[in-house]
Image (cartoon, rainbow, N blue to C red; front, side):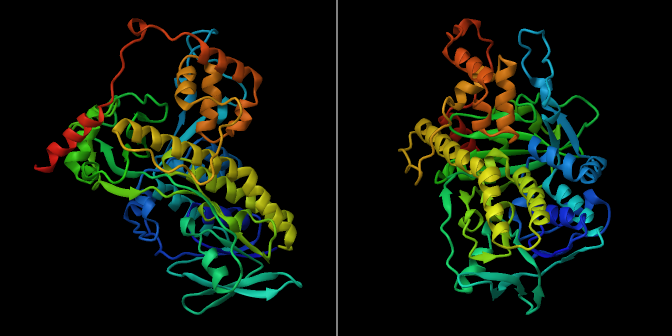
Length: 496
């Protein structure tokens, strides 16, 4: 069995440690932050301070791909999360009826259309304790990897033999995995060792987000409002987004997304402005009333990171063997699309399979790992680049801002794919189209896979080309505020 050092104890690092440790491998996780407090999971998760993981205090989504990966590879972790108050939500309950009757007919594969309602720290802690329970897994907190131990592996390459920590410890290993998150620390390790680092591919997101958690005051009663998006309430509107996600133990989070550089919108950091924006946003107003929910903390702002595909993760040449990247250290997708945790789980569990197949950790493992990135992560990077750019341009146009720079490498839509608004309108009336679009949104299938289905594509094209119903026949729906209305409501709170 191999000895593996994993730099980073987040979702990807812990999932990989769990998968390898469960197969008898020796694993040591080196994590920069301090350990979680002892005690009950939910309370300990709420008290866990992790300054090196700033995004942990923001809303996260474990979509259908993530649930499927837990069901297949770590069912005990899923069961433990459910025992701690997380909930599974069946998305087919909001599918359109279609010609077979008022309710959606189930088809094979619909059992995968579920999401897990859970806060990121709760899932992290359940994973942490599950990995630590394995005899071959150890976690060293407050420990940072600062460099690599390298040895020649041939005339043109080098092999990783371990790592050096900030405390001067030399930790030997057969395989080193960078699970350090978005900073992808292995790039600096390689550069410090004089190893050329392949270029990354990037596509900006250009958004700021503001989020706040709440707890329902009357959890035994009906919810304050409907989840019009299946697992969420609210919407991604023409010039901003305002979306609510339920979580565990009667907690929910609301996140507002806005273009940066607008002084008025930056006031969303204040509770008054944040609440005013929620009250104007469709489907959210009832949730933020004082008798409905209690805020659990301040409004927190965060800049959205760009979409990134790391050259170190997708390089098939393998000039340094025995070094891999996992999760965000390999690929970052725009967090507003909610794919990060699920892709991290998928990538980690599949990396464990590769390490079983290639225990020598040679060039064959490097090539297989790069092919895995291309197959599992690259489609979502490409889609993220396209969708991030399209969303920002739509928002800029509606707010009167000039067009922004085009992405460095334009990403075309999948052949046959239609604009998102057209697809969403078709999905609202046809359950076959709904199923395909939902499988994309929950990362179960790539756009290329869904749009290769002839029945799906025929239905979508027919609905996209059908005459739109007259305005008088369309039931009125809640209207999002105009840019001027939203700015006025926010600005009115600045003097209070």
